[in-house]
Length: 534
Image (tube, rainbow, N blue to C red; front, top):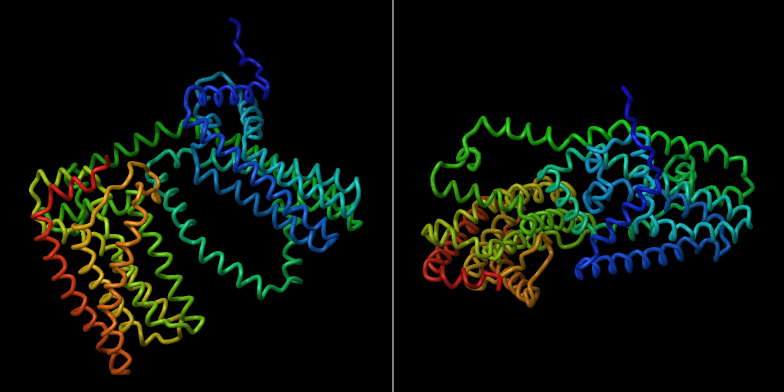
């Protein structure tokens, strides 16, 4: 009996397949065409900007700057190709190995084909054009030979970046198909967005105190690793170190081969990961009843506990709410710690963070939209609705406030102030809740139906800003008497600050929640209409 062998398929077939899928996806869809055009625009901007930036050492005729800048830029590119596919997995689904699971393709054919197709996308072309600035710098510093050598290094560097991307994506593809891992990707994106400001400040502060001799040593070491070896070839030739070129070429080629071998060993598990994952989930979920899985353990088994459980899951799983929590966590820790280290107004900053904690509830009903109709139909009392939402949110915020008080006190060198700072934070947070809860009922507005955690409806941005500023100002003004009392009493406040803050903030919360509950009982239909997207 004749044995049927897998047909020979060239890498060019995969490239044509990818381009055909891309063209078919754009056909008849104006929105996709616009998004693709925007992607090209960003790619061109990145390519031009990167080329000009990496050509600066050559234009300055400074070989030392090139020896520092080019390996570090190459390492940054490699890290970008390493992590972004994990965060944005599924953006280019034509490269998903699971799509080829039923085709009679050998592993080598599949790997070479997917590898060739991955080098034809906008990110790869943008990277190649941007790193062309390195070729320009090497040519100006070392002549045509250095430029040709650097061109080889740039091409190998791109292949290394693509190999890293594909190998890591294949290894983690099974995990990234689950909803929990996709939630983790959203968290990483939000943390990155929230850290932009702190990272900029940190980079600027580090640049002012940088020891460039030490930075040059680090760049030299990176140039001998797979991170920067491919991007330091031209500068080595320009500096008369041509003997390093073959050694670094071996390092880069060995890294590419190793990554492709790893990719080849994991590609089959990536193809079969989806089915096995679903079976594990079904088996694990069968041990508890549906009602028990909806309730958070430790909460009372009644309507209040059910509402708190629902809100806790919403705050952790819904992208907009989770974005608010993560942004609060990053700003809440970074801002007071940096002020304390720099000798700034630590007390007022802590008060600001406590008040900031309540702002996320300013439009708490807008997160749900018309889904709030279920609670209206069920006849949930206003006070129960308000208090359950505040309790669920506080289960996330209060541990953060405890951490902020501890970290700030230790950073300032005054661990004895932890209790007093926590009292100030809790007082500001309680007053913030007392202000924001009635506002959330009276001034709610609709949010767009999108998974983008930063998306706002037309006119929603000013509304959100006004509500946030109003709540923040009210909470700060209400907490100022407690801050003044701490300055006047002195050391005794280290013992009184926590209980006074609990009582002060607790009373403000009780008054605000009752007012908001009574207001909600009278305005449920109007509130539902306000948060429904039209």
